Length: 193
Image (cartoon, helix red, strand yellow):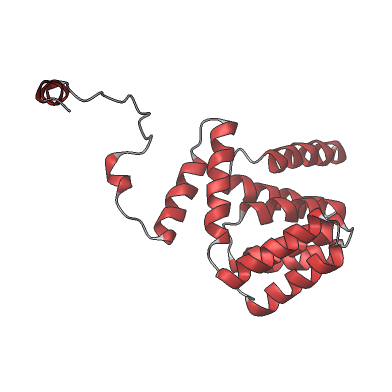
C-alpha cells in the first residue's frame, strides 16, 4: 500500500452508524440477576401501552420463567414439545410426568402438563396442576388465564372470573383473560337480571 493511500485512509473519519436506540434507560443496562430481570419485565408488562409490546414482554417473561430450572428440565420440556408436534401425546405426558417428579417446585412443568391435559379434555387434572402452579408462583399470568378457562369449563363462573382477574392484574393485555372476563361478566350480568 502506498504511503499516500495509507495517509488518506487515516484522514478519513470513520462512518457513523445509525443504530436503533435501546428503549431502556442507561441504568437498566447494568447487570441484573435473573430474578431482577424477571421483576423488571413483569413491571414493564403491567405498564405496556400496546398489545404488541405486551406480547413481546410476555414472551420474555415466559423465557425467564422457563430458565428457572436447569438443563434437565429444559431437555424434558423440549422432548415433550417435540412429541406434541409429532402428535405423540403419550411421550409428551411421560416427559411432563418426569419433569414434575424431578422438579416439583418448577411451575412451568405443572403449567405445561395442564395445557396438555386440557387439550385432551382432562380438565380435572388440568385444574389440579394449575392450582399447584399458581401456588408455586402466584405471578404466573399464563396459569391464571388457563385456570380461568378450566374453571369456566367446570361452570364455576365466579371462580373463573376471579382467575381471569388475577391474570389481568399481572398482564392487563392478556388476550384470553380479557375475552374470558368479558364473556363471564356478560353471563353473570344476565343471571342477575
